[in-house]
Length: 571
Image 1: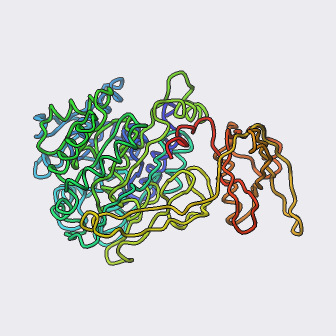
Image 2: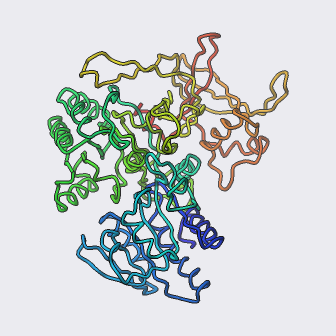
């Protein structure tokens, strides 16, 4: 297990523990896109075979990996074949769509090809992309599983929920009854980012967002015909692509999500009118054209890929550094799938990626220090950022709502209850005012404008750390003093880090330390240890000074570091 990342080992260990605890356990492993789900699949099967051998004295249990998607079937078969090559365990592929019908000890199969077939006797069933199993009715998965009630059942997904029904393991009709391991939640996702396994997704609203008020909703999702009728108009497409081209000048590989085929083709043509190399991928695109378009994007021969519900799963394009959302959705699953295309990291060569510090350096010095998300569709405000998705079970909660706010320092869209940006650690101090523009494009556009603030960036010459006790309370904190040296801005500015305290101030301090700590192992245990090891804190290159309009005193509200100069430049 030593060749795997620790969280991958933990995912398998937690799942085995859950299965050992009860034979009726039908559990889910939830890992974000880009975190190495395929490697977990390999290790999981390897350990399940050992478990089954111990329990049943059978060294060759039948393992069936199910999916609905030909690309996923092909990928799973390829990585399993490579993983089990040394043990000479036979890996089969069974898919009518791929023209292959094999049966081996471990078989990767399309559910469409086997759910009515006889002769399958799986001991272990693993469903890849298990969120696609319908909540109600029989369906192909349920029909097949009904004939194999004794098989161990495990699901893999980046989205352990379905629109309208909520979490996959909760409520009436749930096929699964537990989540044994989850890194797709707020804490898990952020940890993977901080550990250098996933890319930062810095999301921002477009200047002119789509107004979906009044769009028809069918089966819990916006009507594609209504969306196309409202937003696939020359004036709107031209305005949107003008902004995409302006923002995209800083990025190398763009992935754009369109409403339907006609919309995608209009977007592609408009991009080309601006001199942008672009290719369009949709259901009428041949397999050969699709493969070539993806390969062109991977090699850097094409800047923009425009697609309609094609490049959401089973596509590995780590170099995507700009995602453009021109397709409104109410589906949290589709939303996460679209955003997840930008979550894969790209490491610069020459760094030790076996260490956290090495991975972060390799990302920040590489061609993709982060992925920008430009949201015209309002999906992030509607459904939440990728690390904090709003999931509403059927009949519960209010429809719609405001689930994010904008970080003034880095433009990341975050949950409204967050007081500190989970990515940059900046404190939220200013609100965003939303106004509706009148009849510019048939009331199809919403305009976002930020409140003007009195702040400025100053360069940091040096930093001093001292223990400090607050007057009156005597509560200790770490006083951090930034000395600057640039013309009229030469001065000293201080902030106070209340590390180890309970409540909001302590949580803010924890985020502050996490973003700056470059020591190996765990974070400092307390404030004294932090002070004694202050030499292990990264020194910022600049700090953002904000002047309080009430008292005129300046305060430090954000910091930039050497590795995120590109991020600062993108604001």
